[in-house]
Length: 335
Image (cartoon, rainbow, N blue to C red):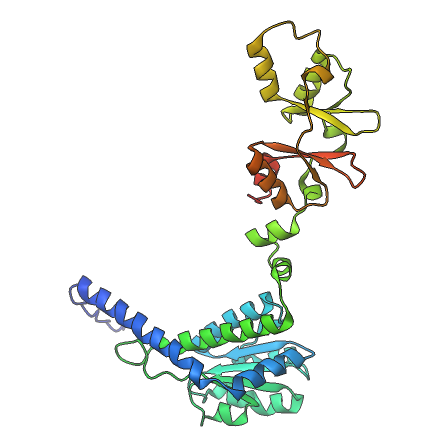
């Protein structure tokens, strides 16, 4: 017979108390983070030096909430120049310890420092000859005693009104992981370009890694005409290629000018016989150009500065290489 489950009736919602608890949480966690600095010393610098000397990877471990924080720390380290990944301590006892190699640094997180799962694999880690870095709230714990370097994540109290749920302590662990990552990237001379290579799908990656040559229209797709091309033939090229412009070039493919949809509109407004005109008579000389090896974001800045929607792309010899439009930049999410 199925046992009946009694549902506890929640008290009426108190909006003022909810806001009060939110403010209290922020205050407790902010105080906990500010208190971390004075607690760091040789343990922190030793950990940074050990990771800098490490010929392998940083293996981050932690159970429960510490494990969730550990996954984030591993991701932050990996994205800022320190090869790292997370290994679950429980799974490590059942085969995943094979991911850990001699020479690796193991970064273990445990607020109590007494995690049974970590304790079970400490002898095996020692036999592998890894360097053990502990982030723990207790300097006298099992984990701290076995660690080569200890980072104190101790907090005076949790933000939880019952002082039970990991809140301020996990915030402290997260902040220590960020502090390690920041110290390491600075020591490695990690720059914007390095960050972009780890984030090719992000906005910064697209801005720092995508070049004009990656996005430009080129070859037969370009609306290319000579200076003596009749006006109607210029219009045919513009219509056929669909780029809203025709590029006027000499016999050596050097750009003489450009004729755009806007130029056509202004010619029509002025009136007169257009069919008798030649490309050289309707083009704008000295169009805005950019090198094919330039960053796409530079092309975007050029277009914005001159309030234009496309630029002519030149190769290293100064000849026509392609054409880049605002639409190309938008499709690539550069802007």
